[in-house]
Image (cartoon, rainbow, N blue to C red; front, side, top):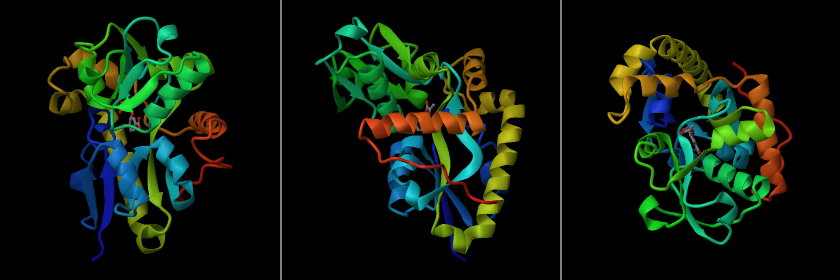
Length: 268
Ligand SMILES: C=C(O[C@@H]1C=C(C(=O)O)C=C[C@H]1O)C(=O)O
């Protein structure tokens, strides 16, 4: 039997998407867990057939990928876990070193876009740890949720909040992508996977209480975890597709990706 490899992000924010998933999937689907940047690399290299990847990675490799309809990790307004901590005034960050987590791609591109094109400042970026930088640090996922408790710098920008404030749109951080070439061999498996993901999302969102008890990072209280998960969205509606295209157009203008004519989806 050939194995269909699915890569998921193990952050707390994916808990509703993967609620009960592993127990219900057919045996030919094998799940592995890794940070987004690692999943982006694995799917690009064909080492996994499907993955919850950074939306930016879909843009980069869209010729080899298809999206699973209606799945994402997104937010309309503040997301709570994509945070840029910084010292001093934002307008004085030009030329100052700031660091970002190695685990993200979308949020790094979003940070650069917001700082440079929306706020007109151009810091010096590097991958690194918060303690290795004097002026700013971008964290995502559980790390951001935990750092929020004891911030490394006095000020914080929630990138989802700023994006929505500036554009009036939601922001899509991650999408569920499948390698086109795996569809022929695994068409039925992909349909089963999609059905199971829709089911686990529905169950997860209607059992947030159980899920929070089981999965919340210990640093977060129950109400904090509930507020956080309640602010996240897991669909890829028409408006979110439009928002993705707006983000991609900004990145194409900035020379970070090539133009994308349209988002392509798996036909289920
Ligand atoms: C909202 C989040 O979205 C994440 C952000 C990603 C990125 O920046 O590349 C990728 C996957 C998502 O899990 C988060 O993890 O906090």
